[in-house]
Every structure is written in C-alpha cells, then in structure tokens.
Length: 397
Image 1 (tube, helix red, strand yellow):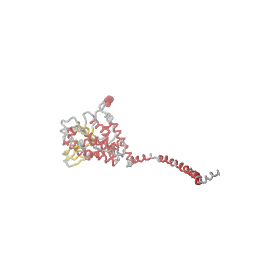
Image 2: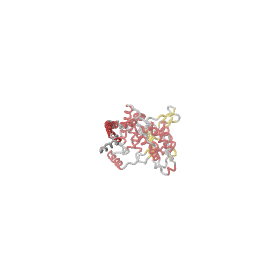
Image 3: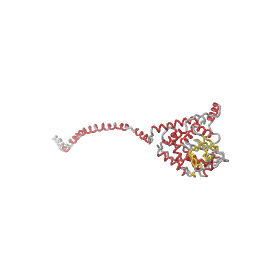
Image 4: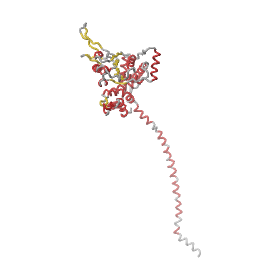
C-alpha cells in the first residue's frame, strides 16, 4: 500500500505540463537565428566607414580654388596691351633712376610725379624754400626730353607775359601772334601765388583745355602740356592765395619734405665726387613717346566695384560734417586717371584698391574746404581724407 505515494504523482500530472516548460528551452532554437543576425549586418556597417575616408578625398580643398576665379581679372587684356603697359613701366623706371641721380632719397615723391605726368595732369608743390622743387621739375624736363620753360611769378606779371600777345607787323600790315612761355611741354610756374589773380586766371584755360584764347583766336598748346607750380607756405606777405577754381585744376598737391641725415650726407658726397653743381642727366624719352605712354594708361582695367569705391570716397567729402565744400567731380576723375597711371607704373593692366588709397590724399585734400571752426582747431584736409579711407569699405576685386 506504500506504493500509494506514487499515485501522488498523478496529481502531479497537473505538473506534467511543467515538463513542456522545459521544452521551452527548445527556444535555444530561435537563438540560432539570432546568431546569424549579428553576423551579416555588423560587418556590413564598417563597410560604409570605408566611403567616409572617400569623403575627405572629395578634395574640398578644390573649393578654395573657386575663390581664385574671381581673383582673375574680369577682363582679358590682349598681349599687345600687356606689352605696351610693361613698356610704360620699364620707361618710367628708367626715368625715375635718372631723376634719382639728382634728387636723393625721395623715391616716393619721384613716383608720384611720374604718376601725375602719366595722367597728363598739373602738379602743385607746396613746401619750404630750398627743398629742390624747382630742381626736380628741371630734372624731369631733361629726362623726358620735353621743351621746358620757366616763369617766375611776381606781383607785376601780366597775363600777356605768359600767354603771348598779338604784335602789329608793319611790313605785312597785320597783327601776328607771338607765343609766350606757355607754349611748351613742361611749364614751371615758380612761386605761382605771388602773381595777382588776373594773371593766375590766365592759366585756367591752359591747365584744363590745353589751349589759350588771345582776342578771338584760340591757339592749341603743344602736347603733352603740363604745369608744375611751386609755392612757399610760410611766405605770406605779397602773396595771393590760389582760388579754388585753380586749385581744382591741379591733379596733385604735394610736398617734397626735408631729407634725413643719411640722405643729406649722400647729397654732399655726390657733390664732392662731381666737382661741380650741375648734374648730367640723360634723355630717356621724347614728347611723342610720353603721349603714347599716357594713351597706354587708358587700357588699364578698372573694376566696376572700384569705380563705386572712388565715387563713395569723393561723395563722403561732401557729406562730412567737418567739410564746408567737398570735392568736385574732378576729384573722382583724378582718382580714376591717377590710379590707372599708378598701375601702369608698376606694369599692371588692372587697378587695385591699394592704388586708389595710395593717391587719394594727394588727389583730393586740396579740393575740399574745412569749416572755419575746424580750421581754427588745426585740422588738416589730409586727416579728413584719411578718416574717410578708413571708414569706406574696401571692395574685393
């Protein structure tokens, strides 16, 4: 009867289903598929990693090459134009070297005079006596091979003394025109502010239109025609300040400045070596070639953004609260012509913002008039131009 306990397992039959529970371990079977799952995709994932290095290979550095495209001039100069401008630069450097035999340590001044000549503009030197203003003009005339005349302006100088006059010829029974010293390629108007306004006015037509009208007859001046004038700022007695209309006709107003000690010592050393005051200057070019150089500057490319840069600089002179009278449109034309000449001087066929900035003060400072209260404070026109240059955004070309 003891075996009755075994029947107890019969109630355990309800537990029999438990054995099927162990059958659940058959679930390891699905575990088998789980194993392949990781196997296939996981290695596949690293594979995309390989293309990732390929992405850097997409030489994004090539993108920087794209900005270089705008850097290329938006124009394409012909080989002939580039050759002419290279010749202009070479001749200008030769002239500069010749002038430097006489004028020591003033390379930047000589370059600015050359820029003025290539622009076919008039030049006003304002500086103290004895700083080689007259000597520089004479030397340039010799190196350029141009016809040179000098007029010493005095209070009793008459317009006819400069322009010339009609003289009655008894043999012919008519008036004939006798040209004055104005009929030359390079005129030195020495101490121009000593002449009365009437005589100064006689130069206005010549400086702008390159011609002179005597009576009813207009006479063309020889080409090229450039006026280089000098005046001393400290000598006020017996002087007549230049009117704004005449100042506006000068392309540049500049000074020479004192030499430093080393340059002044070099001046004395060369004087001892020469054994004479005069310096022999070689003729580098001639009037016809000077005209050709001026015409070649017309081929220098000016980007539209740079044109607007020039316009903005000039417009700011009219809007500045410290300025009574701003620059006239001659100022923007002066920026255009002289920046082109500056580029040609360096053998380039296009203008850069640095060309414009380098000549802006020389071309504009004398064209503006400051308000009296700022003049009393000692403000200079050049400071106003420099402030404007710092404020106006520089274009990228």
